[in-house]
Image 1 (cartoon, rainbow, N blue to C red):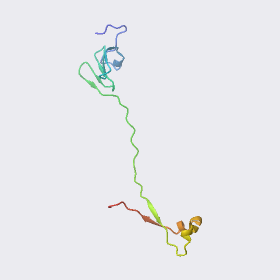
Image 2 (cartoon, helix red, strand yellow; image 1 turned 90 degrees about the horizontal axis):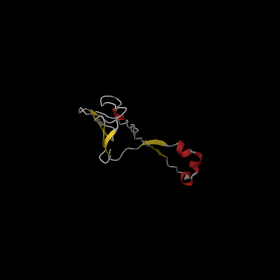
Image 3 (cartoon, rainbow, N blue to C red; image 1 turned 30 degrees about the horizontal axis):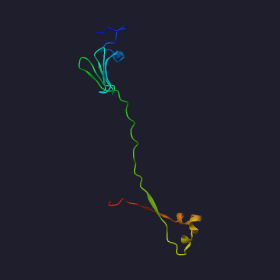
Image 4 (tube, rainbow, N blue to C red; image 1 turned 120 degrees about the horizontal axis):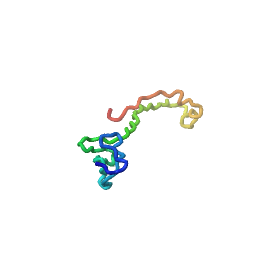
Length: 109
């Protein structure tokens, strides 16, 4: 079948893709090799006996798992002495030390 020297590998061999291109159709995404194999741009193949070789595609990396964090708000106690308005507790950390966690729920839940 092949008149090339050295002859092209047969369509049954694992090196069948090394055969010379007889007819190229890049606009359509395929080429016909000397051994009768049709190779496609996505690396899939159609062998002369009708068997299909699926494309060799690398596995895509798994997307990262998304987690929804539950946020906790701090409820700062009211100060009757007015120091919170003046910024006094923020500097010393008093307001945050006395804060109590409050669960925040999604709307409509």
